[in-house]
Length: 373
Length: 184
Image 1 (tube, each protein chain N blue to C red):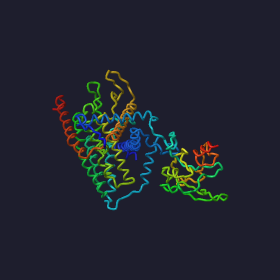
Image 2 (image 1 turned 45 degrees about the vertical axis):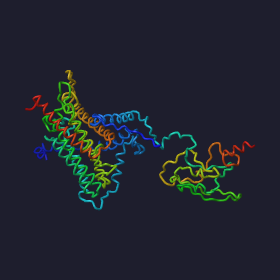
Image 3 (image 1 turned 90 degrees about the vertical axis):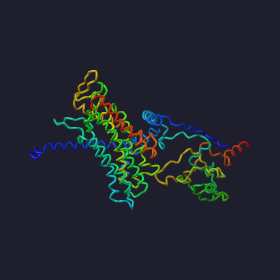
Image 4 (image 1 turned 60 degrees about the vertical axis):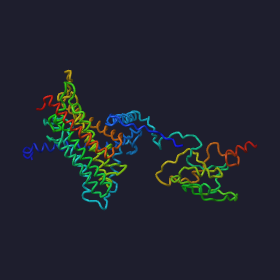
């Protein structure tokens, strides 16, 4: 036993650490998703001068609606799991998995902290360290189209198919913009690994401005946010669902299969929030906080314990994620839906040229500064 | 003469066409509501209904739960003429008539049920009543119930006088009573 451990020490420790990280990080994401379903209703209620859900109670304790996600889950599980008679059974069953799995897999590449020292081992706070994580992110988010399209097509319902067609067209189009907005970041930081990208954002510009993505690539940030909301299929880009017209690709779904689609949508909100934080707002970086503690631009320093630094960094990442999730909810409940031709026009006639122009300008500036030859 | 409202559909200017400043303005509005309501929840107009209620307006148009008026001797004013049951558009009134043993020229309702789960609170029964025996002025609003039976009101539940009633005189409504008082 000991010999086996000694012989395979590296792989065993790696697997154990990865399992713990997956459990902690994905567990956190899942519980935040459940809370987000409540937050969506509460935020929209507060924006419309309403109180929102506050009646679900356990032993008379309502806690201002905190039990509503549990009540929703119980309701979803108890509902009839209906499959239309003409539906393509296998694909109809698989579609919710195709919607949910790629989205959940994407969290493996997101760094939620720098590293912590555990018993002398340096534990990276990222589930999978992939040098080209940005491309993986784009590739996996491209896979999410399968869930939408299979769901719509396998239902054998014309309205569902219409929603699926819209979804495929929309997601393919905005995927292009999403990819192009990230090119500028790769040019500036010279890396496509998310952890490296975040570490590079810890540098200072002119000695006092943190070199966050939003500072060096403000246009790319706005384009990324628009494209990411469109990828997320939420208002103002929710023509895929279009609940007042076609009801969307998951029209024939009920019970937990429908819940899987809804859940993947809410997980995507968190994903977009995390990506926005990671790529453009320094990820886990706290301004002027380094391994040893705070070092302010004036030269003043405040030494901090390693674990306090790590906690501050993970906390900073969580706060940024929560903020962007909230911001996406507010956007969703503020803007009206686009028309489909407007949606396509916006992508191909406005966002795509702007993204290309952004790359051109970034390249020109880098050339002028002598960063590339 | 149909009045026409002219809407000034001027073309959008450049800033409005690129939409982002307008998005920021829209977000400012919704975020203001969000934060005002977040930090001052009591400022919202919502009332947690069954636990909290608003004061009712005291005007004559107010229609609340029904009651049957009672005479001074304790008998119902209702003479079981079925006018209200006939007038009711929701078919929610059920009456069974009976006769007084000692006074066989007048009827009374042996059964008078109102199914509040079907009642549309239209007040037709009050208008139809020739005896002014049914009224909708209890100022109680029929709320939800866990079982249909709880929404069914019978004669015992409906018979009730408000303070100041009944008149000791015989006529059926207050105006007539005042007239009779004046004659004395």
